[in-house]
Amino acid sequence: RKALYAQMRDMPSCTTDGVDVSLNINAGLLIDVPHVIESGADGIGLYRTEIPFMVRSAMPDITDQTKLYNRIFEQAEGRPIVFRTLDVGGDKLLPYWEDMTEENPAMGWRSIRITLDRPAVLVHQLRALIRAGHDRDLYIMFPMIAEVAEFDQAKVLLDDQLRREAERGFVPRKVEVGAMLEVPALIWQAPALLKRVDFLSVGTNDLLQFMFAADRGNPRIEGRYDTLSPSVFAFMRQLVTLCDEKDVRLTICGEMAGRPLEAMALIGLGIKRLSMAPASIGPVKEMVRSMCKYEVERYVLTIMNNSTRSLRSRLKAFAIDHGVK
Ligand code: PEP
Ligand code: MG
Image 1 (spheres, rainbow, N blue to C red):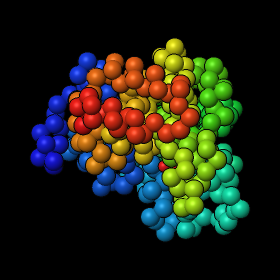
Image 2: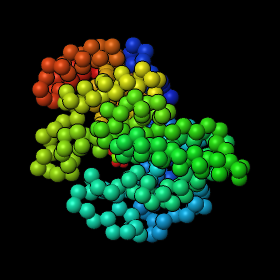
Image 3: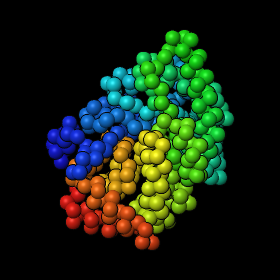
């Protein structure tokens, strides 16, 4: 299979009926970055900036961060990189940070909530990203946005830093700003949200945990709720429609995007951009090149509205019947 994936590296990620699907990688360490070239992905759809913060013994300063982001840009050889700002708390703790013991960390003081409460950390990171992004395309996204006001607050900090750094001669060629959709409440603020963002990225790892109110790390409920459920499909379909209307780029970057059957369903629902672990690019591309988007869409729309449980077995059967890999 490895040889097959290598062969497909430069082949287009396109369905049999001509729909292009952009495949991107998720990365967090510098050693992940070369995979974007090796796998033939379009870019880095999610760069988890907290990973370098987690493996250090102290908070990296602006200079260290600028150097690191510069190296990421260099290694990605011009492919677009979406930098997600610091997403700590919950399951991702910094050894040198204040004690964050909480009753319910997944819903606690984490991610954008921390960086808005401690803006110096975010400001330093944004400054480093702008400096490294000088004369390059800079894509920045804010994680765990639950209210549009949080996005606005973060965007004000970014705009301030863009002005400040411009005075020092650091000017990105282009800046695009997006939000991660991980908290269900955000979809009901779509009109306000979609006016503001250049793109949206769905973090299904967190989103599904909140949609089903089910801790995904808890073995007692593991297997009770499935990603391929009618409620997930209804959510995604609604989101696709909203984003298409406003011409906002939409990416799915949670783990489900890297599983071929899930990816097939997402593409059927109208998703055109996926971001996944580098090792998933080959299998997902093979699947994309074997599916007819029109047929999958028709099937998914038929079954999603008259089913009360996971659609996995029916989708599996569909894939086998239609020669989808
Ligand atoms: C997610 O929640 O789906 C996501 C991509 O972010 P992380 O896995 O880093 O929380
Ligand atoms: Mg997340």
